[in-house]
Length: 463
Image (cartoon, rainbow, N blue to C red):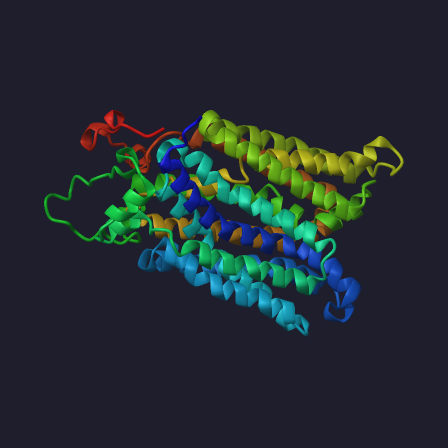
């Protein structure tokens, strides 16, 4: 009988708890694709024009941008776990407002508050998982939040195909209650506790963390006495290699993730299939795309600690580039519905989702919790989330305008160009973090040698 290490089970439990936050993010992202057709069919008086329709899809990322700017100080002061717990009741309230909305203004209020909560949890959930896992399994467990996001999108697509849009909102509120309850028995991040000068022994013991996982980087300039770290926004710190290098890599990956066109696809899937003249029913095609995203995220989770981050990101960028070229061709040549090429839109988007989910879907979020130095991880990961969410808002809100200016074909070809640039950026700029402790990754960007601190290679691990 195979014995599963207690460390793996405890860290998996914590990861599942934190991943509920990402599942709810998936519900927020998938909601408009299912809810808008339901509103138009059953409560058509609530949406007067296409501009209002676009705001229902675009306003959550705007709220999330504001939330992400607040999440840095919040998780630095309250902790990673407590930030998630404090957000859960507000998130449930946003779904209840949406479920009872009697006019368009209340729909927008519910959507923007749900987006605000996305911003509150996006960085803390990923950082919480990364700080509470051993390096040897951090890739697999750190990819589970993104897998959960895909599951949330699929739940929203599937349930929304038969549920009234108000009931879909109430269903989503149940997951927020579950998030609060599941987090209750879990420990706070030992990294955060140590940074605050608090005892992290019980958290380390509960998680069964190895010495490899909890090794820290010591600054040469700090001797025997403990000094308060300098502010991130001083010139000396912000432009240091320990901050600027991972900031450039992390922010660029999060930017390219959105400008691959992913959220234009997720938020307007039904509309894209209708416009492209796909031979499949639009809602069926939407659910198919969601299922493919979930499957390929699962494959990525299994591969990330074996293949590494860089190979998956490179494969992802190439696949997305080719599929977006195909999607543009489907619009440009306007293939007849009766021809086999009428399936090109669904084929292109399925391939796109496969490629996206293998790499750029989850790995930028995983790296969000890996790349940044310990003292400034809260602020930098929150800033990275803000870049990602502002990019998301830009992509979603500009989609219809770009269609008008560039045509649908030109818009998808533009996204393919961003994917091509992303490939070369990963090739030349992104380091491999597979199997490395957070301390080793920080040392890499500082340009320091391992002999300066703990000899990390001699520490016994549990995996």
